[in-house]
Structure formats: C-alpha cells, structure tokens
Image (cartoon, rainbow, N blue to C red; front, top):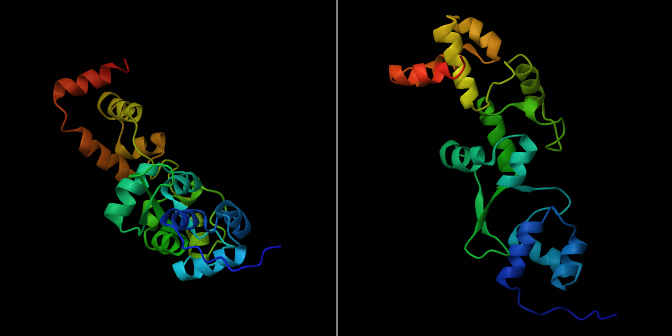
Length: 210
C-alpha cells in the first residue's frame, strides 16, 4: 500500500467538487472520485471551513424547493434577493459560467425562524430538516388552523372563480374565504389587484365561466 503523502496542489475544480458534495457524499467517496486519501480530503475540508462531513449542512435552491414543497423561484427570486436569506454562489462543475445558489443549514434555520410568515410548515414532513426545534413545533400547530391555501400562488382559474363569486354571485369576502380556503386578507388583497381591470376585461373573464 502506498502511504506517501500526497503533495499535489489542489485545483479549483477539485475544491469546487468538494464544496458541492461536502455533507452530501461521504468522505470516502469524495476521496475516491478525486484520487486522494480520506485524510487529505479531511485536512483540506478544514482549511476550506466546510464543517462536519456527517451532517447535511447545505442545500442548493433546487433541492431546498423540493424539501419545503415550494417553487424554486420563490427562493431565488424572492427569499434571497428581497427577504435576506443568505446564500453563496458556486460555479457548476460541468457548466462553466453557470452558478448554483448554496444555502447553509444554519443560515436556513435562522431565516425560517425569523420569517415564519413566508412559508407553510404543512408543505413538508416532520423531521425533513433533521431537527424539529420548539419554534417549528409551535408553527406547525399554528399553521394547522390556517386556511389550506395560505402562502400558495393564485392561479388564473382561481382568479376567474374569485371574480365569479364576487361580481356575479355577489358573495361576501368572508363567504369567499371559506369557499376558496383562503384568508380574508388574501381575498381582499387579490380583489384589489383584479379590480383595476377595465370593465370589458372583467366581463370577458367572467364570461369564461358561463
């Protein structure tokens, strides 16, 4: 067995691979892929500040969207640029000039706790995030009392139904909120977005349901 110390310099591609796979793949599989010893991989990980290899410590925006049951663009276009979710960009291994957004586990949990009005705990299973701190258990209880479609994007068909219920069937917003399983405030806000439509446009949309 060759026990000589590996003195090769680490390439940018090797470090990118380690950063991407760390906490997901095992140390041994990373070492095999790179043609290095597990000891060399662990030493380099400490210099890169990657943390423990035995816990999933980061997520891509794509993986996180599946985990939380939300659209990926909610993370990339809203949570990160407008709501302060911390992430770092990393160039993709096989597509030069293309970047992934990487969210660290601790940053994610801190953000979720501080921004509980922006996500619904009912959309992912218990322990999907590995731990269930007290604040998450309490949010699950509170979310269980909320309308089922809270936090979900409005679809065109829902807009049509809302117009039909409000303008044609003359339902109150309270009645509509029960029918559509949306909060009163959500119904009120959505109507304020739809009302500016020209009268002809409103008739056109309502006629689609006739």
